[in-house]
Structures are given as structure tokens and as C-alpha cells.
Length: 489
Image 1 (cartoon, rainbow, N blue to C red):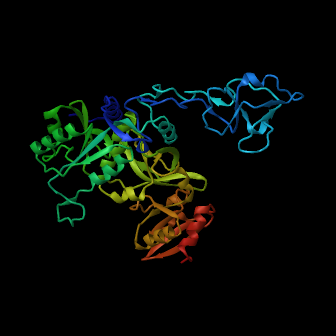
Image 2: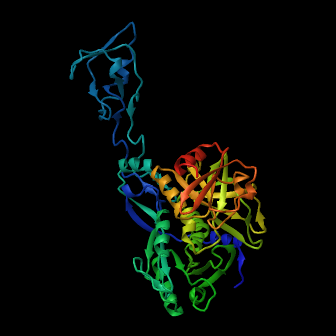
Image 3: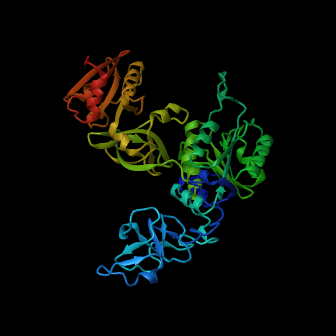
């Protein structure tokens, strides 16, 4: 099947008709869930007229003659507190502050100086809601503060929309987590990562055991997962190699909608429909699988009403030149921080197999199809996976990541300071010219001629690694970095 554009693949994903199951959950576990059925009050609230104030229940008609210059003594009344039933003989409540009496718990008479209207300070039967009336319709998302009201209306459980996602890892080379892999073996970590991410959306997840690279076994696994879930994800097997059987297995059971997307990473991403349910194939490389989850599965779940972890998109400045292929959409892992009052971003090394790229990143950038290069200083879209406020307290470094620079990260972390590294294979020191980062780590003897004329500070980090900073950098993060780096070499 021909690879399609990312925008077209996303449109196919968003066009999938939602498939929901219904399950009943106790009220205390229902916050954040979407109702599958309307909720109705089990009884009227209040059940009978009750006092809205501490005071005295009276018959309003008997108070008409009261005036400031004509105090009226009443003997027909009942003392009530807030929430007490107001008897049938009374139709109003006078606040205790507006009554003169002897102060006892059971006075025999009270004096008032103004009349009161019928219904005043009395909550009528069903004033809040009448028994049998709808509280919330199907499709409403339950908020935490809805729960108390629902409990007060006699509701103890709710029928909510439920989605279960089945995750099937494939590959003969997979070994369990905790196993020391042999040459050619791979620890099966994608399903653990996928399940952790999906549960942030409030959906159920079933992780199936790994399936060997065999079309019949993969087809049987998909068939079983489709019968037990509303969405099915397959990890690995979505490429077009000799041992990649996901597409053909889906085709046996349903329809392949797309197989291959002009994007990086996650080019082998695919989607099919089996029994009306989406079956999505993710690449085996962990960062590529994460990209499929973020860009396709997240959109699918959010369209179906399941909100996931917050994402913020900012305009950022490229801290260096960033190349790309013109015929793809690229989603590049990146590290960002506030540098000299601007949000600056540095890309990670271009590799879907290096999970440390994800560890070192706090977001990613989208380089649209048709863009060959983003020049240093140009604006890029930065999609954060951390709170934007963190960028103010983050140190952004580039250059070599050695044992010495790692110790700098350790010392910073001990003080609660975040350090993010951009492309650790870069030997480019010109970023200090344009203030594209807070510092650059280099090896002793590195060529610094490009920085002639730039005031520099140099710190020895050990292991032959030097940290270079601009001597005139004066933002808060630069000051922190000087202190943590220690004395100048």
C-alpha cells in the first residue's frame, strides 16, 4: 500500500466512528467519566418543606399586623433550625435574628416588628429537584463537584462510557521485562509503556502476551482482542519486511485503511478496521511507537471523549539549524528552556531507537512537510510534555554527554534543578554566539576559534570535559549553572 501524508492519515483516524461499551461504576469512582445513560433523581430534594434558616416557623397570614411601631406577639409558631421540616400549619420562617424572645429553647411567645411573606426562608418540596427528573443526560462528563449532588439525590452508581484497549506485542525476538537479553533479543517494554500512557486517559487496558512472527498466530490474536476490546493496538510487525504480518492479518479479518505514513518517526504506522473497530499498528522502535500513540491514538481517544495528559504548544526559537526531509512531516524530540528571556529549543539526535532521546526531552517539534531546514533563530512549534512554567527553571546544554557532564546533571538534580541536553552528538559551539543554549560541553582541545571575540567562562567537569558559557550571560539559569559547575578551569 502506498504511503500517505500525515494529514491524510490523521483524517482517517479522526473519521473512525466511536465504539463504546457500558459499565456501571460506583459513584465515588465516576468523576471524569462520561455518562452512557442519563441519571435521574431517586426522590425529591427536599422531600418536604424545610427551613432555610435558624428561626421560627410561622403562618404568614398571622404576621400582617406587625410593624416597627406595632410589635406583634405570636404564640402560634415552632422553633426550627436549618434543614428542619416546616409543619403543614406553617408557611414561612422568621430568622432568629429578627425575633424578640426570652432566649430559652422552648419559648411560649415571640415578638416580631415586621410581617413576612408566605414561602420566605422555606425550601419547598422538590425545590432542588423533583423525584424522577433528569439530573444529567448521556454524554455528560462527571465533574468532581457533581458527585456530592448526585449522592444527595439517591444515586449510588452511574452507567459510563467505557473503552477497553487491547495491546498485542509481536516479535519472535521478544523477552520479558527483567530478563537479560541475549544477542538478537529485545526486552518487551512497549506494552508496559503503552498501557501506562493509555491509563492516563481513563480507559481500560488489556495487555496480551507476545505473539511470534507468524501470520496465523497474529491473526488469531487480533481476532481475540477485537472480541474483547473497542480498540486494538499492535506493537511491531507494521513494517514491510519478511517477518511483518500485521497488515496481512488485518486484511484477512477486515480492511486496511492505510499502511505507511510520510512522517518520521513512525513511518510504518498503519490502521485497519475489523468488525467496526480500529486496529492500529505501531512500529517496534520505542520512540516511533510513542509517536504513533501521541499523534494517532491520542487523537482517537480524545475524539471519543477521553481526555489525556495535558499538552501545551508554544512558539519557540530554534537554537541551531535543524534539517529535515522535504517530503515528510517530522516530529523531532527536543529539549527546551528559557534562555535570555526567549524559549529556545534544541533537537535530539535523529534516531527512533534511542530511548534516551525521550528521557532527555521535555517536548517535540513539528517540522511540516515541505520544510527542508529550519535555521537557528527561526520560530518552530514546540509541543511540551511538561508544564510551561518548568522552562524558566531549566538549564539547556548541548555538546558531549560524558561522565563529567553527567555529574553536572547529578549535582543539579540534587538541588532540584533540571538540566536538559540537546543533540549530544553535536560539536557545534556556535550556539553560544546566538545564545542558543546556556552552555556547551566540549572535550579538552576542542576548536573554539569560532567563538573568537565572545567573552567565555570555562569550567572543568572532570573526565576531560569542559563546560563553556558566555561570561555575559546573566539570566537566573546561567547563574545557577555557574554555581553548580564549580570553579573555573
